[in-house]
Image (tube, rainbow over all chains, first blue to last red; front, side, top):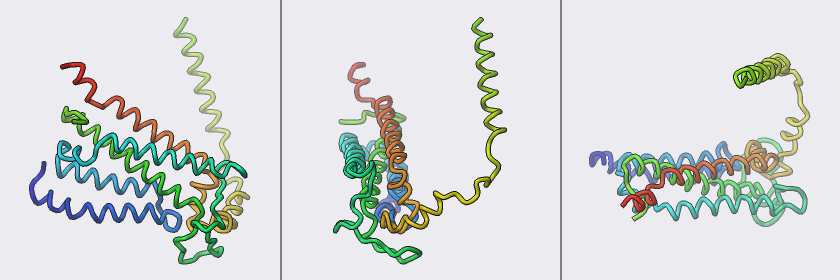
Amino acid sequence: MLSKIVRTVANQLILFILIFGLYVIAHGHLTPGGGFQGGAVVVSGVVMLLVAFSSHDLKKSLREPVLSIMESTGALIFAILGFAGLGTVFFYNFLVGSPIFGRVPPTGPGPGDFWTGGFIPLMNFAVGLKVIAGLSAVILAIALFARGEEMEE
Amino acid sequence: MRRAIGLILLFVLLAFLVSGMVLIHPFGDPSPTDMDDYIIDNAQNQTGSNSVVASVVFDYRGLDTLGEATILFTAVTGVLLLLRTQKRKEEGS
């Protein structure tokens, strides 16, 4: 556990890091970035918390069974969305033209509309959930292993 | 005997690697590929995504992304399996 200054700054900063990571995930079909990159940003915030506070404090709020369930849910959503368009071809973008994320932008550079992209935003959310939960679990496991603590109470 | 076989296999591998290095295309040889033009022209109409990179990663090449997600899943499973300290302490005490 570091000094009180570092802990206070980390407490204030984690909110902005989480918002930025969720922004990168949510706008993956409009701007550079996506599920993997935004998830990595959120996990960097988790690493900052792990450095500022101790892993003993962090494992009370980041519990490993919840992270495992989150990661499996993300993988399952991804696979189900891939199989859902199997009537045409595997990973067919079946949501283009539908009411959900179905608008089609004009060809060429444009400002971008959030309600476009077919299933690409949903895929980004699934991959982001998976990366956040998976990498957080890995980093927490490594930190707890280095301190010789148990993972669950 | 085993050393001779290993040496022969090593030379075969070396021949493969060197031939791969020699036979590679020169940089930028098949210059305008049709795939690039097709994706640049049709990505926004077909997938509705303004970011063409995202449309390639999640739509045109979605199967590769599925493999990437599987790699991440396997890595997390392996790390949690190896570094989980709960079971070991239960057996030790």
